[in-house]
Image (cartoon, rainbow, N blue to C red):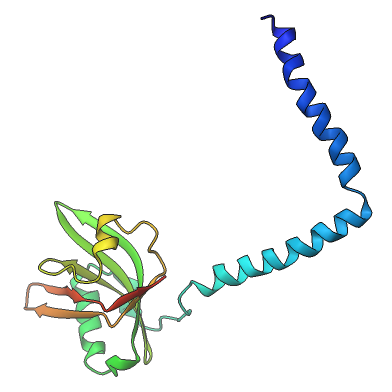
Length: 171
């Protein structure tokens, strides 16, 4: 088949589409399409904005100076956690991390005046986060982690936050 003949095969559908679109899109049809598209766009915008965590503002210098995996950052977080009402805290998935077969998740922790990130090592328990680990965090960023429980292991050399469990994920 010659190149010109191949082009003619595709020309028929394009001419048909163009002629049909001229018939379909008169002013009345454009208005009816617009009326159906606008609610869909508004619903999509509502869905996209509803799936994000509430914004908070960090006012702690140490959290600005050090990354969440630094001992100074972790020690400051331990100090602040001791003074907050833990029932007022919410947790939001940020990222999954894996280094030398060690899994961890970075989580936004906020409420009762606290706005920080917490690096949770996943060691003995995966209770409630099996999907996050299986997908390496993909698709879970911004999801709320309900009733997050973790342990704190601290000595003079290191501070670790060890994941225990969550009761659910609100995505």
